[in-house]
Amino acid sequence: MDSGRIAMNGYCFGGGITWQAATELAGLKATAAFYGPAPDLNKVPAIKAAVFGVYAERDQRITRAMPGLRDALAAAGVRHQLTVYPGVDHAFHNDTGERYNQTQATAAWHDTLAWFGQHV
Image 1: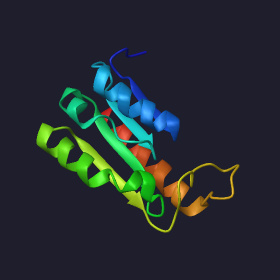
Image 2 (image 1 turned 135 degrees about the vertical axis):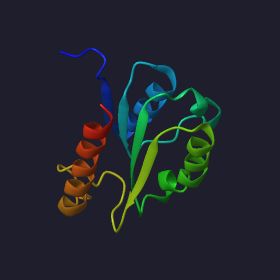
Image 3 (image 1 turned 120 degrees about the horizontal axis):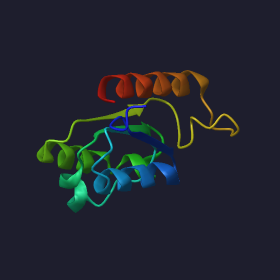
């Protein structure tokens, strides 16, 4: 095991925890936060990991904060990709709920694996 290859992902509340961890855990190589609320933008410069955000077009409560987060990440020089998946709502990756969308969930998972493959 390569102890330097640590990644984290989380969904909903766990996505928010993933963002928080990225601001505090210097050992993380990469993260993927699925529709998690943005971290405190003042903490963004502390992020060392390559961060990937998965968001839903119809989830305006969470997604509308993405332009500010994108700007903060860019200003801090953090490697990032924030992707808004079209036509879906919060929890679109949860295959036990009525908002599940197999097409977009599969696309988001493939994008996540590609992100981890590139950065971990």
